[in-house]
Length: 208
Ligand SMILES: [Zn+2]
Image 1 (cartoon, rainbow, N blue to C red):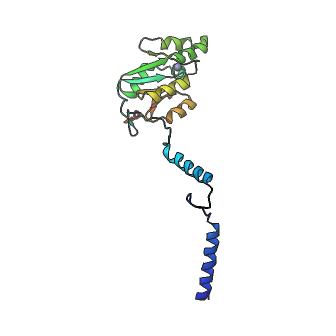
Image 2 (tube, protein in one colour):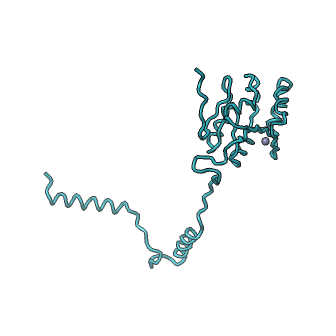
Image 3 (tube, helix red, strand yellow):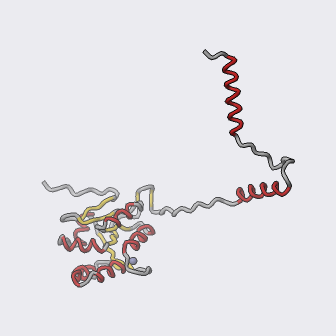
């Protein structure tokens, strides 16, 4: 058993250890300090507190009500990606009709300059795709950027304007879009389109 005396000395030793660990600081007004060091210490402290802290964050969209995008609604504006057009042709789907079947509302597909340029680059095999997107029901969006890389263009558009749905089958693009709140994604399934992240979306019930 440890006696009361023993406990006391133990406590004292602990306190001594602790105080030796604490870094001692002297005040700026201490007379051991030279005048020049004193002023340095003072100005450093002042400049820190005067400057406002600037934290840069991307501004949230005013169209968002928490996670709910208030700008979405019929008619739906759908940004169509290059591979979405190609997959639709492969599955023999009429783009506008299948979109309306998916969302039960009017849909306006949008083609950007860079998506058209990508399709043109793919060559003569994709002539049909080019003919389809030249349909007057497809709206055109003009690009201000250089190059023909559509992914960056689409990501930028949907982060600026929350009124779009992105139609794509590209895995990387889908992953990038999912990081932006309030942007639904449409992709080609076997014989229909599937929408993801749509508020109030309901999957068409399989026919019995
Ligand atoms: Zn573009």
